Length: 640
Image (cartoon, rainbow, N blue to C red; front, side, top):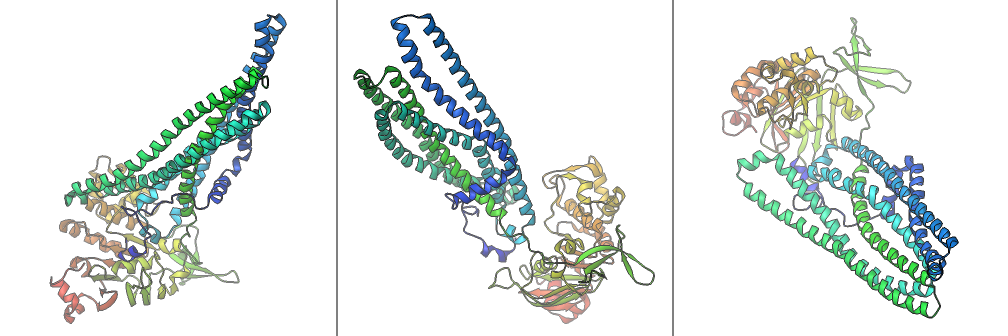
């Protein structure tokens, strides 16, 4: 990460992760955004909604039959047995059974369908999120930790999954149940309904107080869980550094602090969530008892029948539980929406801008010096610029790179490069030396347009690079970085990453060029050996040799070597030096190195200090000047 980029970072938590929102800042916009992902399943959602209504009403209607059973059948049968009444009683029982069976089937249907809807919805969200991450500029990754980005997948999307598959349907079911039960209670007894509403106000006040605290702590728990996960990932990646500096105790202390914060938040969140249900249950018992007493009095007075009171009491029990469920599901929904906002915020980030219109195409070189575009790889390329009249101008890709008065800074008020001008003719080797932070790596970052220059101009083969499509520009470049990254896959696949259509023979040739063939053949399965954990089963030098082979197979006209041999011992460096020379032959090469042997053969060496080129020339010329490079070569300073 660039040091200059650090100041642009947003406010961070203990490990550098951005603070998660305590609640969704725009609830309905987020809901509508999620609904957009479900639009292809609108008919399935219609079936789900109908099934929820049928399931909820089946339960409510089933309860209403209690009045009929008691008043129309049980009481008359107790007073005077009657076969006709008994037949009607049995018929009602069967009818109730069918109603509850339909309700059970409907419950299964909407739960099963919502599993499919939720998984498809999250599939689309993951696709959009990952596509956007691939399209984001390098600057975005310089200002956001990997752990925080991973928490979008591990925490936020998983929370959305639970809500979409369970909480949403439970929320709707509870809401419909409350409305329908309330209507039925009014039908049975408006007097008892008023009593229930009074108790309902008390219950809602409790839900607001306890549920509000629970919601805050659950959101805080989600935030701190992301911080813990991010810290764990960071420490796993940096285990070698931790152990080298014997910082295990400090790491454990920091982790214990983060874990303690998570424990406290999780404890309070679950404490309030767990006490809410017992409180509501006990309040529902109080409501049930009061309703039973008042209902008994009304029955004695002849205002209500026994069946009406019993059915109403059952509705009372059914009425209080959904209210509790709504409050609990609301907490989960708000937490998920807060996570969804974080996901959508990344999806809405501006992608890497690319206003280029010039492309790189393979061409056939004719004997008269002209070129023609080819549909097949020929080993020769040209920049293709389509004119307004539809004709195309082809400029052969040679690798002629020019910097003209380039000034650049990662922050507006702090420049890293100041009026840098240089040129590299096709096939030349240009080396950069200087102290850390002098701007060496920044120059290579500007060549491949990881960052765009606000002042000055960079051109390749006479074409300003901001006119070239970034993907095509980068196809003309290959890089070997100090921090080598290998992907999960075989050795062959990792080398072929430089050019996906390369043959096995070309893979082997590239490995031989980098002097990697010998050690590869000594692996358990040779070129088919599977590498995992970023090539953790290889030495750092072997991993760097594979990176060099990957660059070799790309066969690009421009090559960037950023401390490419820093992790290779002197003996290995001597072995691959000829291979490196062959790799750079005919290519415009930019070399950043701290070993004098690596830069000695360069056509031009640029000595940078505080973002400016203070000396330039070949090795002999710079030695004669007896300036900074002379001091570096004499060991008075380190090249890096």
